[in-house]
Image (cartoon, rainbow, N blue to C red):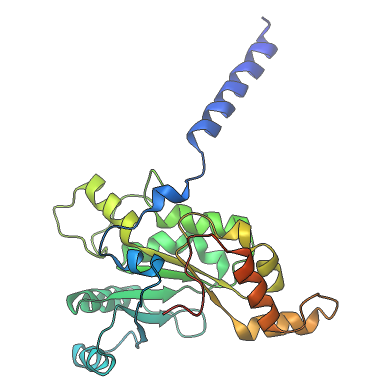
Amino acid sequence: MNRRVFGMTVLGAVAAARSAFGQAPSWSQFKPLPGSLKERMHAGQQVRTVAAPVDATRAQLQDLIKKSGRVDLFSLDAQHRPLPDERDLVKFCKLAEELGAGVQLRIQHPKWAYMTGRYADLGVLAVMVPLVEDVETANEAINNFYYPPIGNRSWGGEFRFGEKPPTDRLKYSQWWNGNALLGFQIETLRAALNVRNLVKPGVDWISWGPGDMAFDVERHSNSPFKTIEEVHAYVIEQLKGYDVRLPGGS
């Protein structure tokens, strides 16, 4: 065997090995842990989310809990509101956790999908990625949000939700993968038509972006969809049988 043929053979073997070890995770690998918010979300049970400012005091958050009866997630928006300072975000997440709740953060832009793990390191329990249209964005969000063997999130950080030092790497990563929540916003016709490829194992819920979807319907007059309601109905039909929470659930 000459050197060129040998080299090509080795490269082929390496590529095959990478493919074998890099198989996409299946839905069965994303089984929520019993009693978790993730389990409740996938079971169609109520998950109560309440918006709160990142500079809210303990008393203010307690008042929101009292008014709502229960809060599972305090919601922060970094897409259309000022991005929280990372130190303030850490403090807010710890305060919420002390009060028995997690924090849901909508990140700034789909191009920031690689930051899902970064925000998780700062204490966020649930991340929503806006304007998801491409498989590459979906993969980026999932791979950085979950630990191996499901994702490829880097190990480290002392502010993570539910972390109680000393932290067992394998136990915590398994706990995170069975508890943390990842959601995508479907806000364009392209996203709607591609939704079966976007909603991969690891995506817990989807939500609408009616304003952006309305813009997209209006500028595509030749589209088969004439209203956002028609688009939403199409998405729901496409996702029948998928283990993902759809808008309109509790």
